[in-house]
Image 1 (spheres, rainbow, N blue to C red):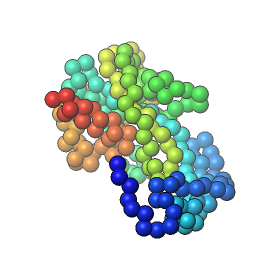
Image 2: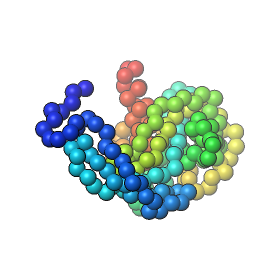
Image 3: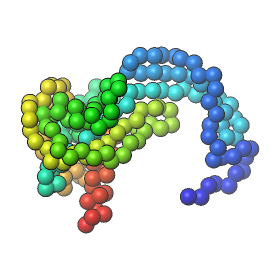
Image 4: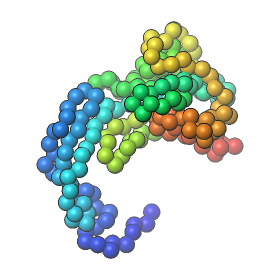
Length: 191
């Protein structure tokens, strides 16, 4: 990877310096802080830093890998309907893999025999700290009815239809997009 030539003061590859962090809002669902930032150029500014609880997302494939488990649901904050994979927030002290197994069972009634971590990413890395841990589940079996009743109804959707759903803007959730695009890219690389 090449670095851009430094045309201003400071090292453009240096980290931003954070000082004087002060709380603005603090709740279990959202923390907002204001900090004094010094950029590598030497420029000073106030910058909001937002924390949201870490989350897990699970791409669930059937045994042949031809179908993915999705729900069509409404999200009230952006007022958007979209397809999503199972997922949710990690509870205090819970490991991401344990949270993925719990969320999968609660939302779908399925238990995975195989669960593999795919990637951890930050959906809005410029100002929000909110790690999302994406897992791939295979070898699932229905062991119970879902206990979460506000997550929509999950159905098996042909994986071949997913690129069209994404292109049509019908997958708006970042964790769902990352997980589904990973699976599609992996399949393309194996072909």
